[in-house]
Length: 245
Image (tube, rainbow, N blue to C red; front, side, top):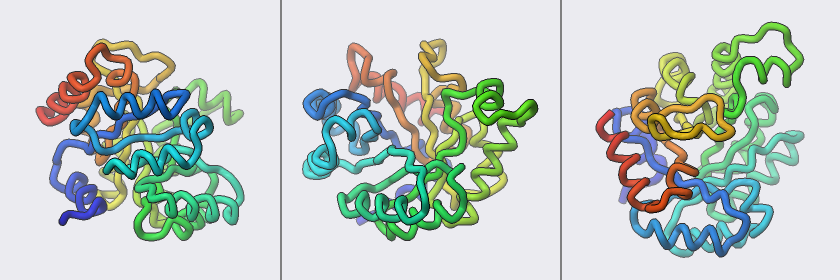
């Protein structure tokens, strides 16, 4: 039987299509599980973010796991190392496969998260949110000059040095990160949109094909799937595009 880490490593090293993760950005467990039922066997990996986890709690992770799904818990932890270590330990105890922390929390915090998560839960460091562009990042960080690509690479370097499973990054920076740090640092790319589709609140988006070409290990598919008239068809179409990249 192939392990999850083995699957991820193979995807990162052989040019295989990214592993799809559907974002369950819903206000209730009922709505989220309804989408899971709609998608059926076409998806077995789901993202639980702040909205759903706050509304439904750890029980939603348990419910998803109980019906054979893997869970990416996207809480973007950012706190003192001891607190993050404990939170990561709790997430791993729930059976979570992937967990995010903010890379800007520093190497000691990332290392604490990895220690708490253990071997069965991969820690991903969030570099720069895809809702930010260079101008908004400069404003948020209070800098007159800032190279977004360089900052992303710097944060990815902290994650690599700490021994993280991977990073969350825009598809626009993914290729540089892959070239700099190699296949052992897995790439999870959010902000995926269909060619010509609405960008919504995202600033740095890519298509499924672009994410695959950039070396994504995982690809988070949100509104382009969950708000489609045919979610299952939209997911299958996105993966066909990625496979053809």
